[in-house]
Image (tube, rainbow over all chains, first blue to last red; front, side, top):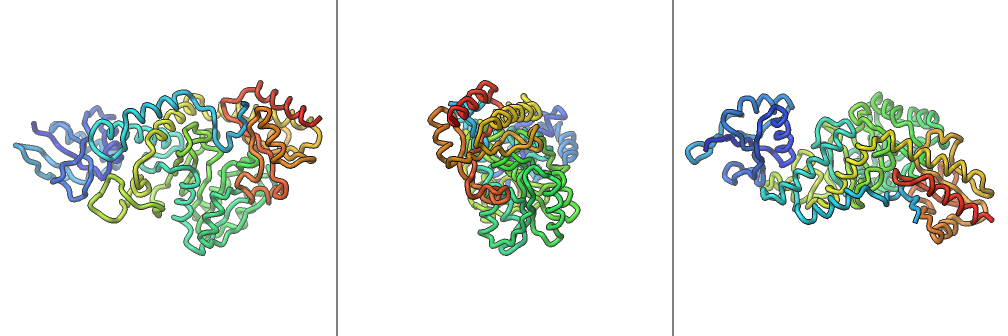
Amino acid sequence: MEHYLILARSVTYAQRMQRALEKTGIRCQIFRAPRDLTDLGCAYVLRLAVADLPQALIAIHREALDPVQIFLYQKGTYREVAP
Amino acid sequence: MIYLDSAATTFQKPPAVAAAMQRALATMSSPGRGGHPAAMRAAETAFNCRSELAELFSLSNPEQVVFTMNATHGLNIAIKSLVPPGGKAVVSGYEHNAVTRPLLALGAHVSVASGPLFEPDAITAAFDRLVTPDTDAVICNHISNVFGFILPIEDIAAICRRQKVPLVIDASQSAGVLRMDMTALGAAFIAMPGHKGLYGPQGTGVLLCGESVPVRTLLEGGTGSLSIHQEMPDFLPDRLEAGTHNMPGIAGLLEGIRYVKRRGMDAICLRERQLTLLLAEGLRTIPDLRIYALPGLCQQAGVLSVVPETKDVEVLGEELAERGIAVRAGIHCAPFAHRTAGTLETGTVRLSVSDFNTPAEVYRTLEVFRGLSR
């Protein structure tokens, strides 16, 4: 199923983004980042529905939070999209 | 036992603290160390604890809340982040060794803003004289751990802001008792233990870090982030939290903080001051005992020092312990404070209360003191 992954620099940062999204009613889950998505080593991602991304970006920017990278999962592969 | 040594560690904790610690042992691993439920439960608990602390001390960002082993650990990070070897620091005359020993280790030039006990204006004037733009840091405790003296931290913070000098507050005795707005104070760091007025377990502490304040690591190691890189992450809290977290401790601390929030710091402070006033007024009637408190307990929190005129403080401490009263006798790791107050030769017997003490315990303590004075 298609979805977006928002890459965070740490688990705490991912949790801050998750709280920011929850405030606007967007549900998302935190997972470990797939190893081939990042050269950071250990990292965390927020997984959210495709339809939620525009509103999610507004919500996290409102709280001055910056995703490291954003990926779209489509047809079995991840593709980076501009943050 | 009547426990009157809460300035060292609060012994009675809300029951939820131990229950949360047991739950953490059974269900949590470590935050940032995996995506499995045990790691994510730990991450959730750690984040909730950071968020509660951020709210309690008026910080907008929970990432500025760093877990430490104790206040001493936090003070070491803060001091070593701000004061270079041979640098200049100004401290109050009531500091603990947790402040003065790191400064000595750095070979810092330390000026002491001294003033008599319970005279905040004199302390403010001393800081005003000594703090200059070339001061690397001001380090000051909020409440003296020996005398309960509440230092004029808002005025000292104003001096620091005016001179653009970073301020480190040692909130060891005040966290959970006195309100503190870190953003309004403009402090660079506030260090506190988890195991005193926040009612968490021993082995927990917190360092609140100001925005954009440079932080130097005391420990380097795994953080569960940026693992490919050999340098420590440049962001908080990871930069200062190398190694596995004390999750039972953090889970217990979270419940302690929730207790403080439910009770309210003003209510806790009022109760502790009432109990201490009762103690001070009762002890005044006992001969050969010097009491360090102003009438009405002006400018003093729930810590009271007394000096017996006719016996050693350690002897009195032992006699009280034998009769079921737990107090602390000696120098309390704060020779600066004793030098300032003139009690370095004798030390003091310190009685310190928590929210869990009762008037009945105070009356019993007074009875024991009376018995010992006969």
